[in-house]
Image (cartoon, rainbow, N blue to C red; front, side, top):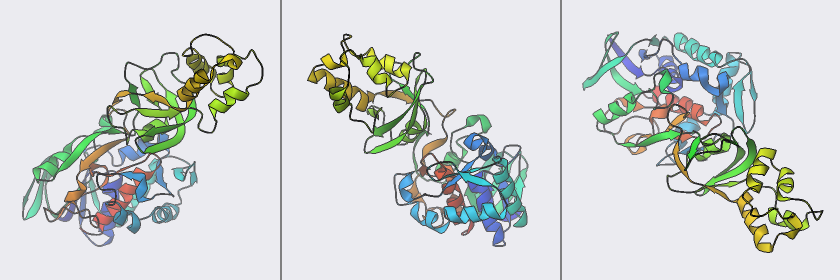
Amino acid sequence: MRYDAIIIGGGAAGLFCAMTAGRRGKRVLVIEHNEEAGRKIIISGGGRCNFTNIHTTPENFVSSNPHFCRSALSRYTPEDLVRLVKKHKIEFYEKKLGQLFCKENSRSIVDMLLSECRAARAEIKTRCEVLTVSKDGDFKVETSGGTFRSQSLVIACGGLSFPKIGASGLGYRLARQFGLKIVETRPSLVAMVVEGGGWTDLAGVSVDAEVGSGKQSFRENILFTHRGLSGPAILQTSNYWKKGEDVVVDLLPEKDVGELLKTIDGNNQRIQNFLGLYLPQRLARHLAAKVPGDKPVSKLSAKERDEIAAMLHQWRFQFSQTEGYDRAEVTLGGVSTDELSSTTMGSKRVPGLYFIGEVVDVTGWLGGYNFQWAWASGFAAGDAV
């Protein structure tokens, strides 16, 4: 059976591409190996789906080419997506920092996409495994549900994160098959494992902090775990972390600890009591144990005050690894943007071949940015196939 376009992957990017192409009168087939489309959408955002971020800019994305995402993001914006959501009468709210979530549940976003695909007469085949892909003029896709041909082929099968719902390296294998370069991949938006192990005594403690890696820093909560650190600020930092580089945590970003230690009232206040004024008690106790002796704050030398201030403002961590693809929200790296048109997402080497969504070397920050990339890149390819 022949189509204008076959899309491999029925996630956010794939479904959006299908409905966009279908609206143009193209005959479209979506091939999805799971028993239902949109599985990752359904489990996202704690089941409520952070479907976009109203403050999206190209600066919220990581890529070997930071300018690549500009064209697609400008052509399909968060405002465009919000209009579609409102059209389907999906109630939503802004949680914080521009993050928009469904009031009810994530399935309403999947239902919206499926409804749009039906209206555009795009076909969706679920429980359908891709066996081989070849090109002999048309693209020929052999699957467990039959053999299909098309003029255009869109790869929208995501990265390696969430293997429990079927994530695989299919998109990268197909890119390599057709001679496209891959930027090295690794788990991202993911908790980190501290060199030498985490802290049993601190597991579960959360604190507002500023976390920096290289030239990038994020101000949000961090969460201590048995193996290392998690929480929004750490997940954001994982996009920028390079093995061997320190990650610096400022536990009191709005305080000047050195000055506070100089002006503290009371001659007998101990370090732990002082730290407990600003930090959770378990963390205060842990840090106080790092200070030699048990002298009152007022008896600290200038050098000791500086050391305590540095400990709180510049706590340095060496991470050995991430918590892996099982825990990662996204895959960093992917199909090189050097290989693709930023306007259409089409391959420069292979006419009619497109890559969209997470499989491409464009990774957003935590907070709805990766969904916006899915919509925008899906729209760009859907408008071009």
